[in-house]
Structures are given as structure tokens and as C-alpha cells.
Length: 50
Image (cartoon, rainbow, N blue to C red; front, top):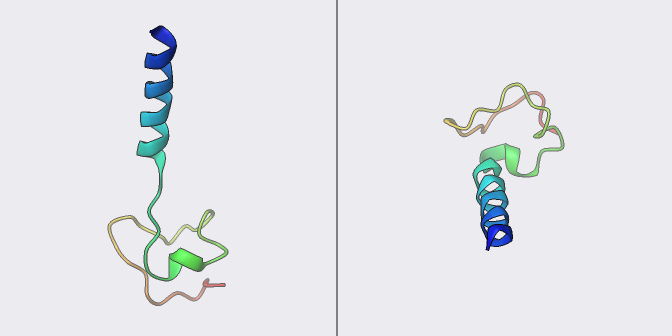
């Protein structure tokens, strides 16, 4: 039973850490290291887009 609780805890942590990319960030090669991207705003114009 403790293993099941640990598995659920790890899974819930992984789900919470999932990042949703929107706008140009969806297919930009720089999205993981981007300093411009903001979860509150959708980026449609970006000089760093690759």
C-alpha cells in the first residue's frame, strides 16, 4: 500500500510540473531555455524564434 501511495505522489508531482506551451513556443527550438516565455501570455511575435 505504501508503494502505491508513493507512485501516486510521484505521478501527481510530474503532472503538476508539466509545462503547457502556446503560440510560437509550441514548436520553437528555444522553448526550454527561453527567458521571454511567460505562462500567463501567448507569444505570437518573437525575434528569438527558431
